[in-house]
Amino acid sequence: MTTQPVAVAPPRDQWAKPLLVAVLGGCAFALALGLYARLHHPATYALDVAGFSSPLYAKAWLTTAAVVFAAVQVVTSYWISRQPANPAPAWMAAVHRWSGRLAILLTVPVIVHCIYSLGFQTYSARVYAHCVLGCIFYGAFVAKMLSLVRRDTMPRWVLPVLGGVVFASLIALWATSALWLFATRGVHS
Amino acid sequence: MTRRGPLVTLSAVIVLAAIFLWANTLTAKPGSAAAPTAATSAGSTSPWETAAPSASAAATSGASTSAGNTVHALYAGRSSGDEVTVAIAINGGKAAADLNAGLASEVSMQGSVSGDEVTMATKNGIGLEGYLSGQNMFGTITGFLGQSFPFSAEQAVVEAVYSGRSAGNQVTLAVVTDGGKATGYVCNGKNVEAWLQGSVNGNQVTLTGNNGAGLTGTLSGVAMFGTVSPGGGLSFPFSAELSPHPAGVYQARITVDSLATRIGWAVLPDGTQVGVAVTGQKKYAAPPLDLSNDSFTLGGSSHTASDVTGNQTVVSP
Image 1 (cartoon, each protein chain N blue to C red):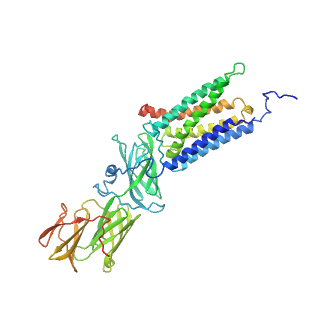
Image 2: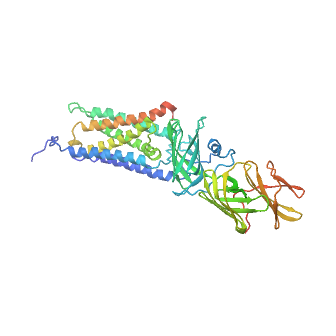
Image 3: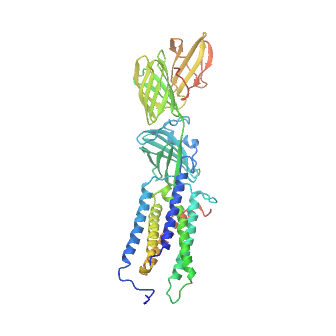
C-alpha cells in the first residue's frame, strides 16, 4: 500500500474553478446587497439595544467591537501563516477562526439595519463610500468562505488577499460610520 | 479536501441576518418601534404660513392612500432614534414638511407626491423620501445634520375650513371637515340657503341636504372646486379655499316670537359673512354676527351662535 504525501502540488489550474466560483459568488452577493439596498423602500427599524443612547450609537459600538475582533484575526493570521519551520501553536488557528466568526456576527444586526432602514444612499461622499464598502466587505467575506472550502488546493496568495480585502474594507466601513459618529457627536454609549 | 467549517460560518451569518430581518417585519409595523406621535406644535409653523396663517386649519384628512388616489393629509412622527420630529402636509400632488431636531435646527421643505411616493428637498441638500402605507408614512431624511434618519409618521386628523363663493357670486359657502366627515352651509344672504352634510373621501367632497341641496367638490392643493346646489333646482360652480379663522360655518337655533328659528352663517376669512334665518317657511337675511364673541341680536334680544364642526349633524332627514 502506498501512502500519498500529505501535501501534493495539485495539477496546474485545479484551483482555478473553485477560486472562480468563490470570487463570482462573492461578487454576486455584493451586487445583490447593493441592488436590494438601492431599490427597496427604506423603512423604520429601531435597533434599540439597552444601554445605548440611540440606535446609531448601538451600531457604532457593535461595529467597533467587530473591528477589535477583526484586528485579533489579522494578528493571528500572521502567526499561523508562518513557515512550517516555526509554526504557531495549534490554538492560535482556533482563535483566528473564532475571532473572525464573532466579528462577522457582530456586524450582522448593523448591516440589516443599514440596508433595511437607510438603503443605498449617495447624498454625500462618506455615505456613498460606506454603501459601496459594505457591498465589498460582504462580497469579500463570502468569497473568502467559499475559497476556504477548498483551502488545500488554493494558491498561497488567495487567503491573504481575500482576508486583506475583508479586513481593509471593515476598517474603512468603521471609519466612514462609527469613527465619523464618534468624531462629530462624541464618544459615549 | 472539502472543508465544511467555512460553510457553517457562512450559513450562520445568513441565518442570523434572516432572523434580524424577520424581527424587523415584526417591529416595523405602524405605530410601533418608531413611536410616532402627533407633533402638532411642529405642524403649526412655517410650511403652512402661506396657506393658513392660523394654527387651526392645516389640512383635511380622511385620506385613502391606495396608489393612484390623491392624498390630503397631515402626517406627524419622529425619526427612529427620536432625534427629529417630522410634520408633513400633503395636498394633492404637493407636499410640505417641517423637520425639527430640537437644537434650534428647524427646516422647512417642499416637494411632491407621486402615487404613494413622497419626495422633498431643500436647497442646501436636505432630502426627504417617503412612501405612504395605510395610515402611515415611512421614509428617510437625508443630509440633515450631516446624517440620514429613518422616520415614520402617522396621519393626524385635523379640522379644516374651506370657504368661498360660486362663480357668478350668487351664493357664498363654507365647508368644515373633521376627519372623513364634513358639514357645509350655502346661502345668498337673502332668501336662499341650505345646510349640507356628508363626507370627504381622498380628495372628493360629497355633501347632501334637504330639497335636493348638495355639494360635490374636489380638493386640489389648498383649494376646493366643484358644484353647489342650494336646492330648488339651482346649481352653481364654485371655488373655495382653505381658510383660517374666522372663516367657518356658524349656527343658531332660537325662538323669535315663540317661533323656532334657525340661522346659519357662512363666514369668509376676511370677515365677510353671509347668512339666512329661517322661521317656519319664511327666509330672511340673518342679523350680523359679532365674530369676536359669536353673538348676535334678533327680535330685541342677544343670542350666541355656535361654531359648526365637521362631524355635527346639521341635516335632519
